[in-house]
Amino acid sequence: MTDNKAIILTVDDDPIILNAIMTTLSQDYIVRPFTSGETALKFLAKNSADLILLDYYMPNMTGFDVLRSLQADQRLREIPVIFLTGSVDSDDEVESLEMGAMDYLLKPIKPKSLLTRVRLQLELQRHRHHLEALVNEKTQQLQQSNRKLAQRDKITLNLLARASDMRDHDTGTHIFRTTGFARVLVEDLLARPKEGYQISVAEGQDIVEATKLHDLGKIAIPDAVLLKPGKLTPEEFEIIKMHPVYGEDMLHDAVKEMGEDSLLLTARDIAYGHHEKWNGSGYPRGISGAEIPLSARIAAIADVFDALTSTRPYKEPFPPAKAFAIIYADSGAHFDPYLVEIVRRHEADFESVLGCTD
Image 1 (cartoon, rainbow, N blue to C red):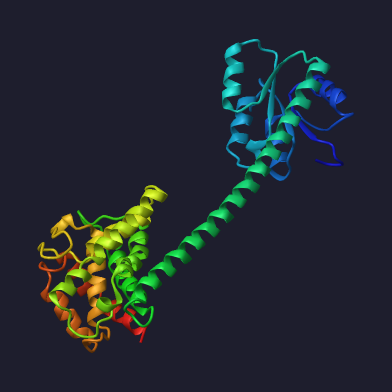
Image 2: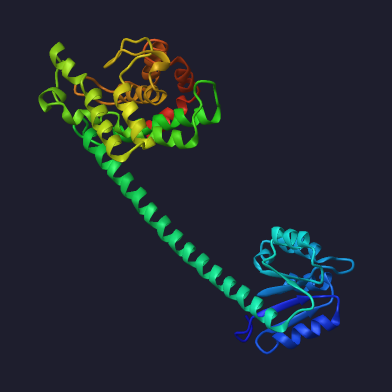
């Protein structure tokens, strides 16, 4: 708009038509007349318009040619176009509308009809812009709300993980380390796709985040058993072995409440599966090999490596070299052999995670 008047760009090789259009529209609009498509496009390269009246048949560059150029330009394609022609060929009309023209006027042009069509298209364009602005505003509000919800969910997840972790660990570094080790494994899987181990970036993120909840079920274990400083009796160990079941039950209920949430589903798999073993001798179900969810196989290595290198009431921390040796010795028995290969490739990364929490 200039001086609150809409700018109408009109293109026609007939000066008489141009004069008629200017006479009809100039009182209400600013009219920019051009006798060829080339000069009109040159003007539009540095300027804009609110509406274009475009002659269908012109020498050198036809109205179709001009419309194609307009449609190819992200800025100009938004300008509504009304085709002007003396042809009564309905195929031409259909083709022009399919190409993006908003309307079609036959020559000789009737002033009242021209004014009505121009006003209608300008009003529709204003309405479209208003709706786009509303949609953009609502979209931004929705994105902001989603960001807040995601942040709230992450905080809730971290608090829940910390609560379960603090049942039997003095600090939250166990969560930090296990997720750090899981991240090393996940990033290798993403960088080196392998049949049977393919994951998406989103799935990898879920695995890393869900590893925080691997011991959620320990919340339900009595303190007398969970915090016992000495060796557990067989009966007490059977109670400890129930924490994967408790964790799965808690997360199963959450999935029922939330629906098929990928993070919660992954957390559920990890909660029940992180004490299963590759050879089937683990608990609580005694499943083996690829029956164990990949996420749980990843969490198993992360959890055990952290346990080996951490202080416990019954042991001093093992140095990384000894922890690696134990992991490697259990390849194919306790742990997925391919994931153990990844550990071998990333010993320095595992040690870096340990170093960040010293």
